Image (cartoon, rainbow over the protein chains, first blue to last red):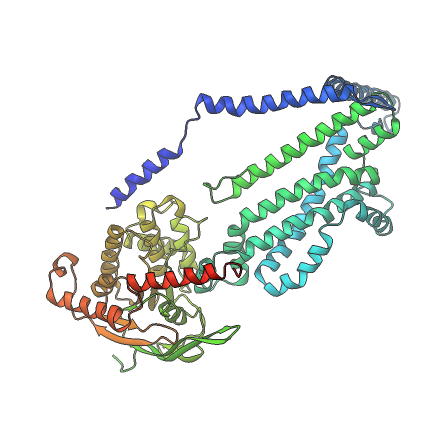
Length: 329
Length: 286
């Protein structure tokens, strides 16, 4: 009978492999393209009709031009840095040849950060803030999910702090960081810490709430299994609670990362952390005729990176989720 | 053998707190079960069968009376009273093998790594599931999941095996196969088994005694019917057996005459009509 049972299994697996028809593929590529074309058309028409004190609002063409300029500026800066370092090496080699006891020093290149370096700073800052927030939110979420009393105690605080804007936190965080983080040889700049902490404060909540909900909605049968097996508290959490609430935790993490990325730009503007937020702020203060187009490049970059971060989280979620049949989007 | 019974339920009763005061779900449940006996609990839904099972499992605490297993009072769940749950309750992120392994590792018996592996494989073999050891629960059929659930329970080497409508969610053919497997395993291992069922044929086929419960609230044991059919039992031969049909008749009589719960179609219609009338009169109340 077991072979007989195995046969329908194989059929059911075959059914799942669906070959997308040409029609489907057309729809999947053509419809987004149509949407994009309509958007670009509307954008350029509207841009022509908006005049600002910094000139006409940039249309797609102007933005594209500035995007290439930013890439060129980056390459030029990299070349400059290369030249700077080779010149230093040559000079050091010459001094060592003259005086063998001389210990060569390498000084870092101090040119202004390029657009791509600013992107990198932003990514690094948001990830640090996000990881710190997750390390705090997931354990507290698990405690809230396991114990109704803990949830009742903590829930008002969650509801109180969840809607607070990053801009409200930032002055407080700035002052606290300045007061507390005092070293002669700082490993991180204060602006980085301020931004990362602000990101953490704002992206704690979705992960915390979703983890608590996920943990509290574990099937009661699985909890009974755990009781019958006499699992201790630690194995109960690692073997039953965590795996079964992974989907909910990841929903929270994805929301948190999205919020964190949004908050970061505002935080960087005010904290002057040399990332995308500062780029936008500096361009705004600069007020040249290209500024608006350059800001628009940053806006699109922020959007694309936010999208990529979400897809990465989704991939990670699919990787660790046991329920491969669940539709994740 | 000692005179003492293996498993004793004495004056077991349970109250659940509700906003309107305590609700007595069970009272005065007395049952003595010998080692190796196969007991079925049968009764209408909501009569507290599962509650009895959960009290024996230690998942619920009796308000009155208590349960004694081998001279020890039951007051918490444990692997010596393994439960096979109605909807298998395998951990969906673990393979069949890992599910059974988790149970084996949690049972205190000082097995070496190699012995654990052998014991897990042995139990999967017992339920004829060795071929799907590495499959996740979502990848196997309902009947196969329930087999793994039984293997997991057996692997704990329980003194008492508790089964809560183990085949309730399965189709009739699969159910028959699993019933045969359970009879085989019971003949081989001689576990004490308490099984909840809705199915009269299943109860008569498998049990040494059928415990019939009265309707709640304050449900208790109505009658106990010893089934003295010779083992091994064969469902096809028994279909024509007058003794078998007599037992079936007894159970059916208890359920549908003495403890009738199902209202006749006519009564049901009348009741519905009454309700409709009431709700149309007071439509704004809803």
